[in-house]
Length: 253
Image (cartoon, rainbow, N blue to C red):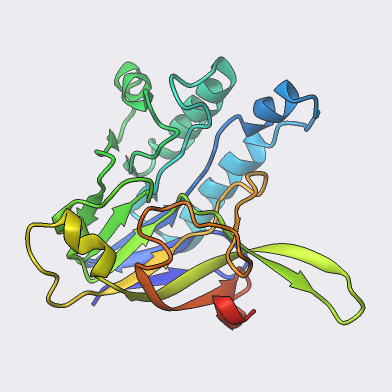
């Protein structure tokens, strides 16, 4: 039985399938602080904090593989020197313990070259952009249509969207919070991109961004979704805060 279990208080989940525990996160965006600096905003690097958080969660969950559901990098093309340094340090810290699978995202354009240039104790692999399947769970970043075997999984896990909600309190104060988005997968928007009909569509899980500097899609406003199959591809989409609080249908928040 496959399951996706978010870790309370953290933008990551443990995915259990084929008797294997995977630590899953999306949208790491290494070196993002450089992007802010280029736009005139100085933010101290949080690279060490990001890396240490991942290592701590691997220890805490006893996961046997790290899965990054796209956008490990920030630049669209070849990672900048700042990104490369952060990514290599992450690889050094993690790949000595468990293998890493990176589901290619739209910001991971030349990540394969970097991976080919470094060698660690455990494997580091970069999948095609149409996703990867492990047991009963499929993974796709979300900027492209999933491969048919990925889409046919019991659970489809994606990133890319950076789902957030805009919350307003009784006195007019506001805040934005990262959320998980979960619901039943609706096959309708996928059908023109598949050669066979989905007879038993499963569920869809949209991961929050691991990196809290990315911003994202405010799913409870009129803001347009980024993925080509959202919002039509999810039925009864429920939003959950990182602490596990269920907010209910995202359109009613």
